[in-house]
Image (cartoon, rainbow, N blue to C red; front, top):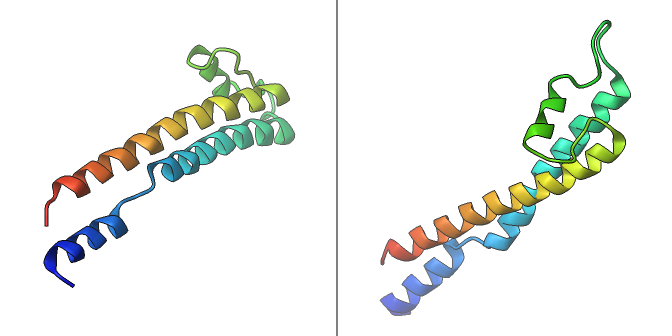
Length: 103
């Protein structure tokens, strides 16, 4: 195998699938926010506190989100979109760095 073929094979093996990183990031962030909401609802608040005082602050950044069962679904959608975008960006930047690294 010559040097060019070896370099091309190395780059192909080192590159990430940016879409897969996006899906993985989206599922992680989406399921994390949904699980946090639903677990908080199942466990309930501490004595003398309201349910989800801190988590409820996300409504300022995620319109439609609330600490309710449906709010967990809304949180999953927002989390998936943001996680997908972040994962996709990380994968794309990594691949560009690999391509630019040369032989």
